[in-house]
Every structure is written in C-alpha cells, then in structure tokens.
Image 1 (cartoon, rainbow, N blue to C red):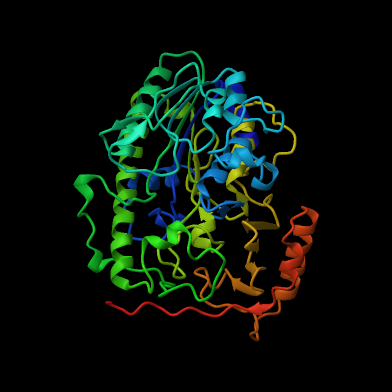
Image 2 (cartoon, one colour; image 1 turned 45 degrees about the vertical axis):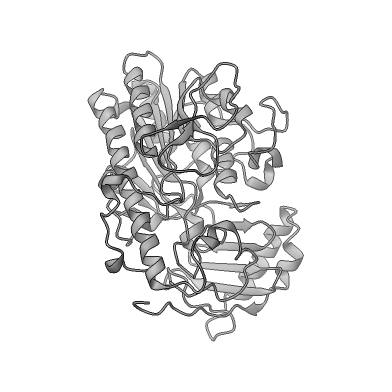
Length: 466
C-alpha cells in the first residue's frame, strides 16, 4: 500500500519534497512507455520505469468546454467538480481566497505544515487564489491558452494583484517553466524545509507550435492515425461546434489530421526534453532520493479519434490521462490498473507527507492494487454521462437519447458499440447502475439518462491518403 510505504520513509528519513509535473491536453497513449502514438518521451518513460503508473486514471468531467480549469480545481482540492462552487471552476469569475464554501487547497495545507511552496506555469484558476497556495512563483500564466513563444507571464507579488496579461516571455513555454523549476529545486538544496514545486506546462495544448528546432522533426506524410480517425463524429454529442472542434474543418481528412498529429508529438517531445532538465537538477543537487515526483495531465485529447479534435467528450482518449509516481517507497516498474480519479492526487500527496487529510476526500492510491473503485462515473456538462468499470464503459447522451457500450478489455479504442447487438447483455445493468449513481449524487441528468436507449451510429474512417 502506497500510504504505508511512504509514511515509513517519512518517519525514518524526514518529510519528502514533492515535484508535480502537470501536462496540458496529454493523451495517456502519447507517453512512449504507456501507449502507441509515435511520440518520443525518454524522460517521462524513465519516470515510468523507475516508479509506478496508474494506467486507468480519469478526469471526473467538466461543467464547461475548458476542461483544463475544473480539472485543476479538482487537483488542488481533491473534490469532484460538481462539489465545488462555480466561481472556483470558472476562473474568470471573481473569487475570494477566504470564501467559506471553498474547499481546502492542497498547496496551502502543505505550506501550513512547513513546506516551501513554489509554482510555475499555467494556473487557470482565479488569480485571487494563487497567493493562498504558493509562497513563491515565477513565470506564471493565468490564462487558459496562449502562444508558446512570447506568452505573457507573471512573477509572484505579495499583494496578490496580477492585472493584465503579464510580460511576454521570449523562450518557448516549457523551457521557461523548466528554468523556473530548476531555480526552485536549487534553492531547496540549501533550505532546511521540505518543498513543493508545481510545474504546470502549457504543452501540448494548442496552438501546436513546437520549439523551433523540432518544428520539422516529424513528417506528417508518415504520421500514423488513430484507429478511429473518422471524417466526423457520427452523431451530435451536444458539443461538436466548440472551439476545439473548429481547429480542423469538416469532413476531417487524413492530411489535416496527420499534420495536427505531427505538431502534437513534436510539442510533447519538446516538453519531455524540459522535464529531463528538471529531473537532472534533482539528481545534480542530491535531492532525487527524498523527492516524490508525480507526472500527470489534466485530461486527454481527441486528436482525430472518433472524428473529434478536443477533449469535450468521455471517450478513453480524452477522459484518461497519464498518472505516474516515483519516489520513496514506490516500486519501480509498477503498473496499477485500478480505476482512479486524477484528483486522488491530493489525498495521496498529503498522506505521503504526513499531513492530516480534510474530511470528504477520496481514497489514497495504492501501489499493490486491489483497493480501487468498482466503477467511476464521468460527466460532461449536462450533455454526456458515463460509467466505467474494470471491463465495460457505457456512455449516455441524454439530450439526444443515444447510448454506447464498449468492452474495454477487447476494444480499447472503442470502435464497436455493443448496444443493440447480440453482445449487449451488460447494457441494462450498466445503465441502471449509472442512473442510480446519478440520482444518489442529485445529478439532474439522471432522468434523461434513463431514457437514452437508442444505439448510437458508427463512424466513417477518413480516406487513406486524402
């Protein structure tokens, strides 16, 4: 069990440092050691080899198209997005750090317990909350997306006033964030306090501008496409005209998708290179042994799968994300297939650091498996609901009355909808379980979901070479 292993280390060797490396819009299969997309990620792969990967980690969902923001709110609080006040998961609304409805923030709890807390990268939360979490901050970006060169960035100020768009940073974003993280790690080597360094990359979020030296690293002509590269999504899922989906026109073509994928993997490669520099700083300063390193993403991304480009859906490519931990007490080369939420990060980190957990949090992750949830319920706005079990996934589209069911053990790319076929025996039980869980959580989509029994149509693949 991870809890016991880490707490033993804390007792004997002091309180661990914590390094969080958060990617933006990264599919789990885009990590070389975890999937089959043609990305080169040797430094992330090394974390996977030296630590443990949770291979079925899901974002719980979103109440808006910018899934990044509620995902970050959940990471900071350990709470489901439906349990957080709207002004917290919608970052452009004003918020007060001392709002009594605001759940405790993980960095703030670590700071109270004696950790020096530092942040660099994409915040995408209310600016008023930042200083409540972090004592230090450099090269911070408060928006949801922006250019990878000349992105407006801030350094922390004691007043907590961050007006405007910040100062343009000429370096490629991941390189600038890595520089700031390295400086924080170097300060930690001469500080008696344990530290939290949170590095929130803007890669590989669009605009998909790789670092200049990698701009031509991948040839679009030879870029493989996902098995479900469709000319369009086969039905209206309620969010087909959102900004992300407009990045590529309809019908999708193999040429356009290959170009998008080539830029995507080049950006990932650039981010991985910056992660390698951060990890090297840990080794160089002699702190790697005492540091819990966590690599994860806020969610995945369509990138042409099922004819979708964005993350406003509940398919595996968008709802799943990489989640890897390396550090004291964590087995090397571990794989855990339990169902977990990304926001299980908060209780796991606090438990590892010996900090008291606030009430109402989910389970602490375990390296041995066997203690995961039996099922996860996922949601996107009031348009989509899903239940995921060890083998099955059922997705309901309550507004249009359509239903999909996939056998993830045999169909990991979700190509074959079992609803209405000879293999649809699990459907009724899964739908009943989903509806009951929605009712138990006072989800208003429960009644409409119960009516979603029409099999959703299949998609049409893009023409090869088009």
